[in-house]
Length: 280
Ligand code: KIV
Image (cartoon, rainbow, N blue to C red; front, top):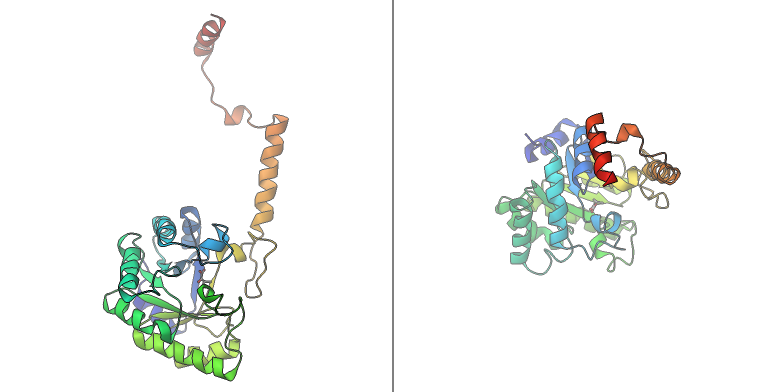
């Protein structure tokens, strides 16, 4: 049985922190699920960390559904949240409803996430009324990178902070069951967390949030040249993998791989027959 919306909300009430991590494929989902996270986010960060785009803007519904399906197949316990990509919910309410429905009907995930506060509240309300659980996302919203003039910490002025508080309330009132706070000052995240009944899940929003979300590739060190301030590195997988690959290449070149251990044999009668056939 997967973790439910009620269990996530209950965790705020009991003060138990929520651990959320991204995953984009079947093997990673298996590892993340087994490690005990409560929520797996198939983020549109997929575009940048898996597909090699320079922002999340080019990511399509088809790409998101393809990867979300794999993550659902690879997990059995965590709640899987599909991230609605840029322009899958902004143009019209009917398109937003149709695309959110595709995540649950086709990818079989349990919830969707979308960016925006007050401006997205009406869409969230309709989705929730239709039975689609929604995670909100405010602060640094990467789909608005052009509008925000870059990937910058948000909510630093009193006016911007007040707007973020209003955004958080608008999402909660619309029925979002959790809200991601990305790249905002920790004291502001604390205020928002204390004012809301639903859990906040922070990324670059300090320790007071009810939960934390991180991008798998950041915390596993898969991009050694990228070190976002908000991401702690728990492993150096790029180095580990590079060394392993170099080991493989070296052994193939030297003829040290494969050995008899990795080869399939034949019994002596079959070898004799084969030798005779080869001599013809
Ligand atoms: O796409 C993503 O991975 C996200 C997280 C950074 C919250 O939206």
